[in-house]
Image (tube, rainbow, N blue to C red; front, top):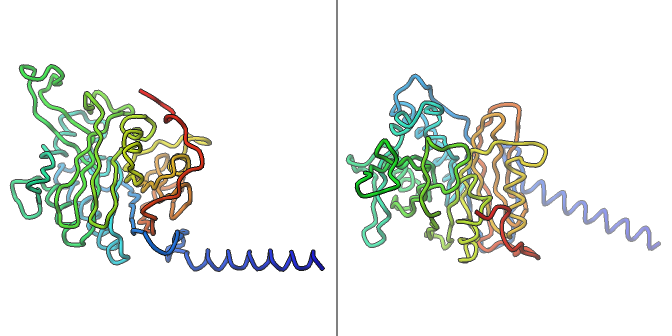
Length: 331
């Protein structure tokens, strides 16, 4: 009798779990889970198969890519997304392997964030095409936009002993725009993964975060930065628990795949990761993770896969039961 009762209870639990899983399935077939009833924001990440041609001028390729980004932002907005994250390298992929001069044509000199006089590039013809376009996307769809670009900073050895020989820095850079189209964050990647000397890094790792209008503080790290104590641990110690994560991750199976790293970091530290990866074979794998729980993810190592993932993310993720003293790499 007890055995029968136990079996009935297990069946009931299984049926309830199945009902919850089916109710939370995305229309495109990927699994999505609402974690809790309140205190959430809705996030979108884009996995993107690169678009353009190395034969095109930079402006033409940027038009193609940013046109795609606008379409993704519009789709995400119709699903209620409050923030959208785009992958590392998507805006300058077609310069890959062609040297600093070509890369520089895909970038711009990005002004610093000015909280007392917010900069809104939308509609300003003296701003770069990318900054204008991203600002207008954020404004039009009332969505926080985080994307990766290049910040090209002129310099001279007369005043800056670290200035590169060609008289400019080329930084791998994340920019974030508020729902009003304001530039609210500029972050230069600190830990380059095979990108030097094409790209430069700041002398001291930057610690950059921004506060979204819906009450969430986001800290910025790019790809390989996630593996280092600075700036990730600094942001964590400041109380940041939400990380838009633009990446161009090289998968190294069986232990170093993109979604595995994103989910593992999320679980270990009790944080939210909004991981946007490129969609090319060998590199792909994107997802939204909260304290290790999969809200939405995609991974397919055999073909190009572009996708929009949307999910509800708890503002305050569950704390991990134990905390390591530092991340894997400490320099």
